[in-house]
Length: 438
Ligand code: 5CA
Image: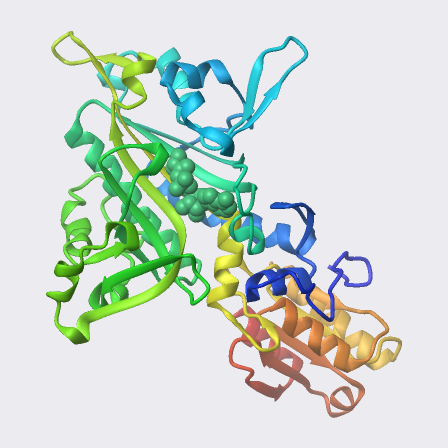
């Protein structure tokens, strides 16, 4: 992408009402624009990152055996009357009437819709297990939308729903999601801690939240240090094998959010293993058995010929919240530092003197080579001061910067900068391209 043709409305100053660094940087980098409280337009740079996170989540869901669908944002109130949640959900639900005076709502989650889909088609235990997910916008009329995309009213969620014949099978589905989630966050460059959690309006008796550590987080967590240090299981686990030991290794170590905190159990840990921190909830998984299948009549015929209610769980990832969460975890005084896996562009080419034949030629060559290698480079070909170009490229956090000025061109070299470390090297163009492309 040539920056002269792109739309990246960066700001020198963050608006005063942006309280946390991720919100400030998203506004300054021209990633989002607030349209109403808690409702945002995603500008090109923000959209690119959102789509990359979405894709990482999608790949890990697919790997763990979940199947993608797309459910509508608007749902029929009647389905929620069947489950008994329509009145109970309260003011967070945005209720709408259509021209026929039918009650609709903008979905805050999709247990009812997916249960309706499931019961229409699946009738036998032989078709189980199933896990259906979608990545779709949700609306919750939060009392206090704040911190930009962290607590929005309209936000993008990945929500998966599992259907099983009995509790043992449902736990296997839960375990798959538990481990897949750890892999998602690791690929996003995040350290996520699974903590025992309250189930809230979703319901159920088994639930974990996934929390990433950040001082600005809304949740307080108490955890065993070894859990914080433990890596993700990695993609090569046997998804059809026994996952319980991998889950147990993690759940055996103390970790809880404030609502579920057991002070005595925590204080029984050796002092050097106790860790208290603030964090951001970036995912939440639930096992709730028959909570929706029983009232909505989602039954299958079991091996003995008798009908049973399916056992369900649901699994949410805050996709749009993660954009802010990653920034909270990865930034410095100059701006965002994207992990390579979600960077909006793989590399930036900075032409410090546009119109100079030598600079233009080297930049075009670099731009073409990086494009051909699939790096999706951003070429700053605007007629602007070098200082402004450096500041903008640092601000938007592109992992590699290839800097071309008249002096370096005369010497037959370019400057290569790694955003994360600030490390700079003066090397030939070929060497720079090799370092970036690998
Ligand atoms: N039905 C279940 C799982 S599919 C569910 O809705 N779970 S949830 O309420 O915990 O939401 C899942 C994830 O969405 C949360 O972990 C959080 O990361 C994200 N989320 C929830 N509310 C918001 C919000 N107002 N703004 C941004 N992200 C949110």
